[in-house]
Length: 117
Image 1: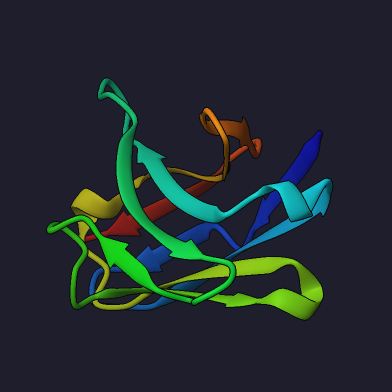
Image 2 (image 1 turned 120 degrees about the vertical axis):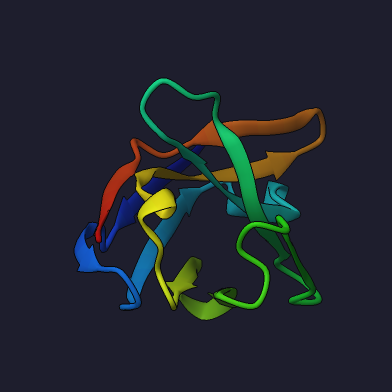
C-alpha cells in the first residue's frame, strides 16, 4: 500500500503562484511515477503532469505546459507541483497519484485550488 497526502492548496489571484506538495509513505519503492491530476466542478478528472522518481523526467498536459512545474525530493518521498501564472480555469481539486504496475492505483485525498479573476 502507498499513502499519499496532498497539501498547499488555497486561494490565489489570477497570475499568482501556488505550490502543492504530495507526501508519499508506505511501499513507495513499488512506485515508478507520480502524477498530478485535477477535477473541476462538473468535469472529468484530467491529467496535469507526471514525474519519474528515478530520472526526474516530466511531461505535462498542454493546458499547463510552461506554467506548471513538477519536481521531486526523493529523500522526503515528496513531489511538488509549482503553479505559476495561475488562471481561473485552473480552479479544481488537485490530486496526486502513484503509478505502479497496473496503472495509477493510489490516490491522495485532494487539495482544493481556487484561482480568482
